[in-house]
Image (cartoon, rainbow, N blue to C red; front, side, top):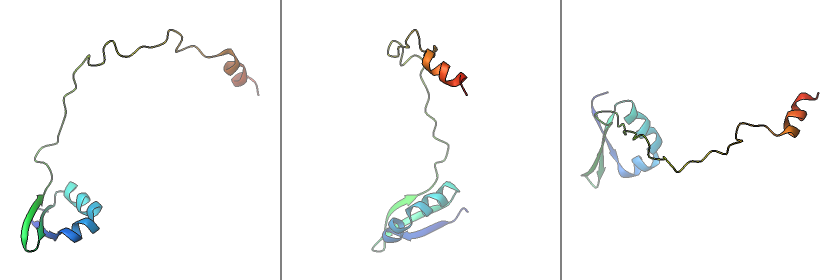
Length: 81
């Protein structure tokens, strides 16, 4: 798309989902209020990626020793027709 689209605050509020969809597709918007630029809305220059740090939950997650064992009643119910 490349060209900036001028949009008023009321129009932005009324069509926020559509404006965000267009922004995701590459459109840029200049938001105006009373003939004054109040904001610019454009897609990020690069995808935002957060780095994951290994081991942040170490010692916080506990798994029960029998977590992979099914109760006999459930197994019996599944085997019956």
